[in-house]
Length: 373
Image (tube, rainbow, N blue to C red):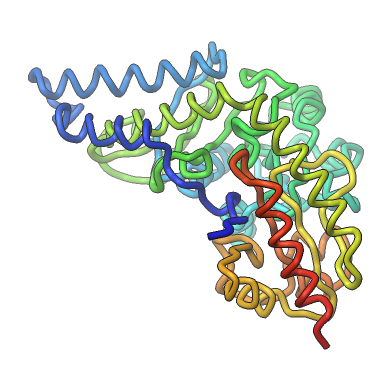
């Protein structure tokens, strides 16, 4: 198999599986129970939270373990927006569907939503953000790394603008940047951020929300009081520990993997640029080396996907969370303003285990379909 869809999901790490299975077998007690098996589970759960805080050097944040980033984004966005009187929120036009859907829902509820434009590299305008913030702004939500284009937003500068302008909260979807891109910001400066484990060789159904402990979030889910009432229900201790393990392993190898993938991305870009009728949609600067979006002009993205599948090659035609709905790729359209390129775009995503030989095989097949009438 020639797998080039690591942005959609990654194979689970054996150490993560071992942690998950061990805790489910030996420490399966209900963490809310007062007797020994419950307290053992509770201790492991608290340890998992504290390990995450140590990794990110968090001194003022709470951790809520969730079923993944979609749930974490919903808890963060609605938790802030619905708990304050102000009704203005800001996001960008290239956010993940789990964020866009939240803002579209807020719009239906009567919120004034500003959708920031992006340039040809997929980066928001800091000037536009600064002008958009006003006294009624309660939330700004900007993803760190775009899941379609790989664009890296200037989170450090965004943080300064939000903090200087007013008391709006900043939410950052960190799914595609976490443990892949070396951060140039302090995690303590981000009011709320969200992470998914299965993008980091963890397990599906696991993720977390980290939020500043000064923020009073309104609960989206109703039930008992676990996890500050924000994620009620019996705590998945094994899931929390496995999630932390995945983040920890990936974070330790972040620099090494980043350098390897940078080399792979450079090689891939060089090869793609040599193919007639193929163009790169990802930016020339401020991009993640893990993601490269291209268009094979005149070819529908789904046609390309299934053509490559014949050769045991797997790429993506848009976000895996939205890939059953075929229309012009929203993020590609935002940076190119070209519907044909948006309809013919595919996403190639790399990992440290990707080889030059695998890329060469992919390039050969892209040349083949690009040359077909």
